[in-house]
Image (cartoon, rainbow, N blue to C red; front, side, top):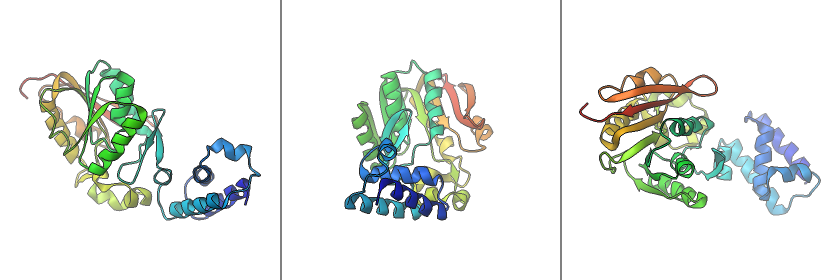
Length: 279
């Protein structure tokens, strides 16, 4: 079995099962099976697969055909130019979440103490620490997710302090200059409308917020008033069609409430600045 033949057969299997981007998926899985990068596949199409390489490739194809996301098979996903480890204990990082990083760097570039709430694989805390060299903290309710995030921080050389806990319950008052979060925001009733790769494989605690999808936003805004220092920013990723309802949660001493769109023009990030004082 040559590299070319393996790619052709894998692509056909994935196509017949209506798996998205079948050729690219076959390339990624074959490269992972051979412990090579994808350029090897193009430069050595006539090379024979070893028996172990073929066995790994067949197993990866089978897992993908069963709905397992490619990123959980390869255990890696790029985010903001860096490679992060991902497992079924954490959400797969999406390109849209990079807008949270860009908004934070634009609005709160001088923040000295950063907190990532619901950190998952640690992409926001690690990325912002490396980009700003600020003191960074991160929390997640899942100890398994914290383990993944710690490994990513160590691998990428980001000194982030991780704490397993519910949102900001373990964070001291008036101690943070910038809070970032990609919170759970899918309403429970939308569960059956999700792609099976998401519904059946990604952690529900990181997906579903409650009946309305707004429950975690409400808690984040409320507790950010306790945790943020005066002048600090709260920056959150938005779920679909939530901008106006989330914006309506900011009152009292919140100022500069604003949203930013993603590349498709969909409101993706909500930011607000806490001025301090009684609400």
